[in-house]
Each structure stands twice: as C-alpha cells, then as structure tokens.
Image 1: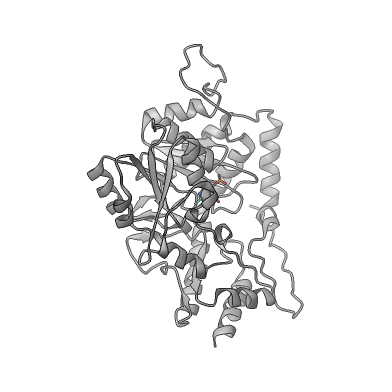
Image 2 (image 1 turned 90 degrees about the vertical axis):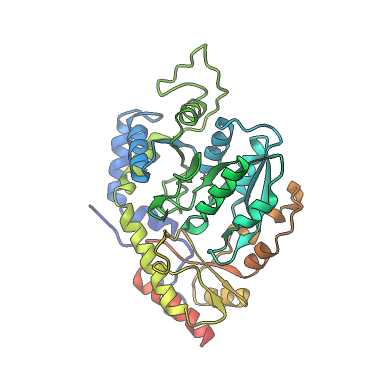
Length: 387
Ligand SMILES: Cc1ncc(COP(=O)(O)O)c(C=O)c1O
C-alpha cells in the first residue's frame, strides 16, 4: 500500500506551518492507490449506479450494523429525501439543536416543514438538551433531528423516551459521526433513518460531494432508492406504475470506489484522531481559560470519533490571532453562526446557552493527517500563550 508523507511547510520563524486542513495532503497521502482506483473504475466505463456503489453500500451497512445504506449525492439531500420518504406533511415542526449546521434546517424547510432550533446541554459536549426538546414540543411537532456534532452521539436514551411519550419520530444528522457509538450502538442506528456526509474533510471523505442514508426501515429504503434516481431503480427504468416523485441525488461510482477503499482502514483514521484528542486533553486540561470537549476515555458509554476538536475559550479571538502568528490555522465552526441567528430565514428563538457557546467556540486542527511535530507545534503555541 503506497503512502506519501504530506509536505511540511516551514513558517517565517522556522517553525512548522499547520493549516487548519491540508486539502492536498488528502490525495497525496495514498495517491498511488487513488490513481489506481480511479483508473480501474473509469476504465470499466460504468460511472453511475454500477457495482462500486452497491459494494460500498453493503459494506457501510455492515460497518454500522444497519439493514440498508443508500449512496447519495450528499448529506443535505439525504436528509431531504429521508424526510420526504417518512411522509412528513407541510407545516410539521422538526426540533433540532442550535449547535448544528444550517444544512439540517434547510432540508427540513425544503421538505415543507418548520425547523425549530433549541438550546444545548453544556454538560454533554454542548449537544442538544433533551429538556429543551421537551419544552419546544407543540401539537405540530412531528420529529426530532438529533445532530451528533463533532462526532459524539447525543443523549439518545432521553430523546427516545421523549419521542415515545409524544409519538414523535427521531431522525439523525450523523454527518459528523460515522463510527461514533453510545453504549456500543453506532450513530445512525437510533432513529428512523440517519444521514451521513462524505464531504472531503469528513472523517470518511471522498474527492467531491457524497453522502448516504442509513435505515432499518424497508419502506424508507425503497422510496429513497427510487427518489435518488428519478423514481427508477438501479436499472434506470422508470416503471409507468412509479408513484414516487424522484430527483437526481446519486452517489457516483468513482466516489463510491474511493469510499469503499477508505472504509477498509477507517478504524486507523479514527484511532489517530482519538490519539490527537488525548494529547490535546493532557496538554490543556490545566489551562483554566479553556474548556475542552470530553476526553476520549472520560466516559465509558461514549466512543467519540472527533470529527472536530472544538474548544471554548473566553479570549477566543486573542488565541486565534496568537495561533495564526505561529502559522497555525483555526476556524469557527459554521462561520460562528448558530442556526437561530439566521434571522432572515425567519428564526425568532432565543437560545442563550447556544449563543454563549458560539461566543467562545474554536476548532483546533484535527485530522488523521496531522503529524506529531504539527501536534507538538499546536500544543506548544497554546501553552506559550497561557503560561
Ligand atoms: C452536521 C452537518 N450536517 C450536515 C452537513 C452537510 O453535509 P453535505 O455537505 O454532505 O451536504 C454537514 C457538512 O458539513 C455537517 O457538518
């Protein structure tokens, strides 16, 4: 298996530059293998809905312990098709956390429903607060969209109890949580369906857009399979009896072949991320100005995959500038804007805990391509500021 070490850049002070995400290194890391896979797939002349898609779907479903996985164009469309296949009605309300990507709210909107963002649980990695969900339920509420942000599974037991009590459905935005577990159960297997993203910077990323819907529900699976391909099945024939309004939301073959290959060593990817999280936790736990996400071994019930390493810091902007001066890139997740702050989209909610979280939130570099020297540089730079 050919691997190529990513190129290291030196910054002006002779230290190591650490971009927030090194996009080119994604391809360079195993470029010989990627070239071979792309060549093998393309030279067969089958680009759309051929064997590579089915093989990846089978392996993804097996990896998660789910009955069906359906390769789709991206996670946002996976959520949209999942909602439509679940029979949501115009005006239904779907509750989701304020700490989420606007994509989930957009899918809810385009399914004809109303996204209702609610506040966070600061004790649980700033994920959705089940009590805030309960308080937001109205006669129009149809479901709860659990968003497993940063690769940590939400409090699914409490959410399921509330959903059962009120006759609601649970859907999962698992874009950031492939392989994350709660009590041994994989993110993506708790609700009626779950959506995953294979955007390049995701823990399992392809070389473009990609996504999947995962479900144990045979009816949802059959409808989403048809919807992704204009109402047709794998053979592209649209029966005159077709009763499903479809669209084009297919995962293409080359991306599926790349994803299948990467799934083969996915555990290594996650282990590297968890090792980096352990190093950050050890190094920063004594710094009072910083609040850290839960440490990988801190809670036996959770297996977090660290799609991101999101900290909170009361002097966030100063920390950002300091790291930038050392050649270290950071970002504010989703541009620092929580869902309910998109007032132009009609949101009127006040979510004080979400606002407080976003005021200090910052993503440190976190991906399997980071070398130990880069992690050292990040740790050293943070410690220099606070010591
Ligand atoms: C939590 C979350 N939901 C949804 C999405 C949307 O995924 P995609 O770009 O595949 O549509 C993302 C991607 O960044 C995400 O992080």
